[in-house]
Length: 157
Length: 176
Image (cartoon, rainbow over all chains, first blue to last red; front, side, top):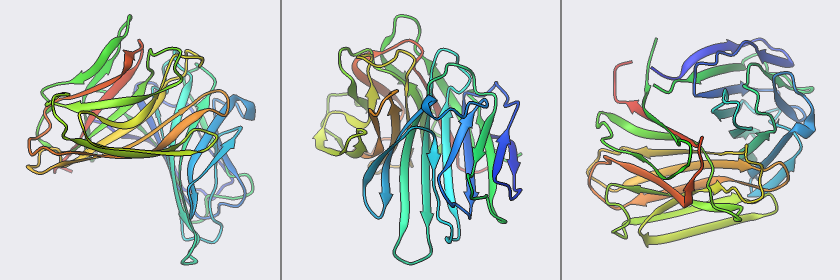
């Protein structure tokens, strides 16, 4: 059996978090569907919101292929679109022999008929600690009334 | 609880490393195969290397074609190769100058892998150094072979370091 739901939130808050993440999976998958993407959002692990502990690059962009470099774990979204979707995979999240690398996919459309955003992002968290908690900070935006954040664990056997 | 993806096998490279990460006798009762990788090449002093994928025909044919695009952190690059003897749908981080704790991530999906037509491969990957250097992008591949995929082998320059892992999942046809 695999892809086990760990927890899900549909509360319209500006910060959402998962604590006491089980350590018996081989990979985590975070799935976010949200409608108010004002500003730059970010994700952080184990309460570590020090931006310089995170490194990321992004491939793709708004109607063009661009690359961006950030000093944290960012994601963005449209404020007027029907929905922004973000999926984050974190293999070996519980191994203390590795820094944690996340691979994230974002799609959003601002419902204008001409502007959309599609990105793939790699993020490095320079810590060998097992990920036991995860927070999503909307930084002025919010999940929105119809949004939902879900965390899944992928089993290895 | 609904179950629509199942783990088939997981390989963790042991102490001393390995040249390839291989999956044999892949079950034939799924629609798609999904490989989830957290791995690092032992190649040094290189910084990045092409990761390779072969199915059961090995490197003895030229039945593979692929293309990929990614960012290095400083610009974008695109690659493609037609009719070659390996798929190279992702980039792997190497020992080089990068911190030994950094492993790259790749997710590779093979749709309809038991069909009697050519096989499509979809890949996404990301490896980020503790600086601006990175490889993150998308790839696509084609295996021109009507045989069902029964084995898969991942390779990279000089091999994989200990602790590299690949987990194989199958997406089930029915049963939810």
